[in-house]
Length: 272
Image (cartoon, rainbow, N blue to C red; front, top):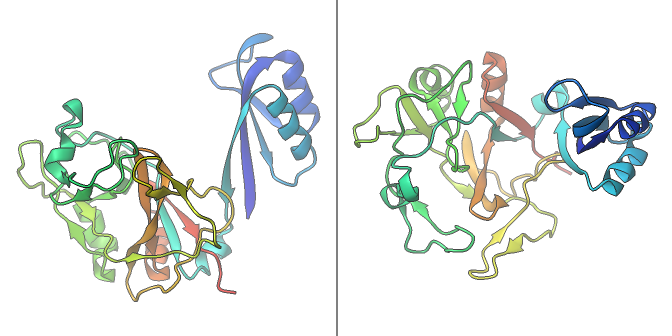
């Protein structure tokens, strides 16, 4: 695997030259880099020559870094389970005015007004028919992290036969849609977090873990014999957290084999 860093900083030619001299690829976030002004973007791999120095420099410039992990095909193929991370987003839950979709889709009686945790889905999501799929098989809605959608035909062809169930989806008037489904994530299973606790909400004390962005994903403690399930732990930030979606090796193989886009497979920690 490779731990990859993306640095963002206020651009000057001198800063760009410093990072380039360390071996980083440096580029503009929106066109040719000016001598001064604008935003610079640099890329580095953890452990590579110049990586540590680049981290220190960007920090001293009040820049920021995002981290992700790139896995080898072998690491994905041999994983006992994988987290399914949906990266393609389009559309909004309906009705979107004043976030009133919450009252339509969720039981909000236990929802925390500060962190947003505690709402329970009790009705189908409503969406507009104008969702933009492109070449993607998986989709999430803006504002919603915990629901994964697929086109019905793609789900039936690649995942239904493996036991992955689906929930109905409706149009804004509450009429069932026959071309979109929401994946039913089924059971809730705790993950092995190595004793790391989430960050508790100051009001309700529910915990949210920062999203996992480096290395293997936490493994399920007692994985069920199920094609897909969700983590007990919640990941993300206030008002935008989710249970991790975990898939079996058979489902991961089907997704990879068919080249289904819109989601990434993140291998879980190998058994000790």
